[in-house]
Image (cartoon, one colour):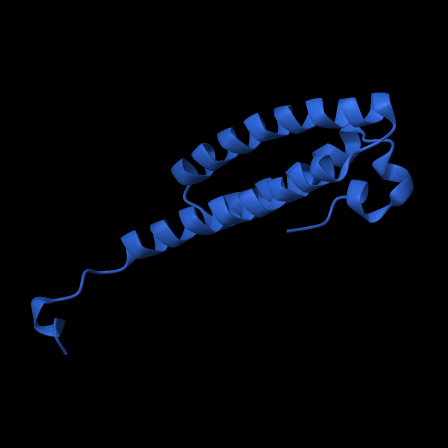
Length: 109
């Protein structure tokens, strides 16, 4: 997934913006819509939207205090790992469902 400007630039870390957030979300949405079925993408993106809402609250606190403790930066970075894992899990599940089931003669071979 693409890296957000918020993480690339130290000065941007102190100035979280809606534009930076939208950029990250756009990239994640595009990947989900390309890899997943429409129904799976809709479920994934609903969770992504909830997480983004939570993250904006955290980033607002960072902006107000002009500081982010290590656990806050770890929390924010962790969301990317969670999103990637959820996306891969949904993609893997849909890929398995799309494959034809094995015939009984293949068992034990």
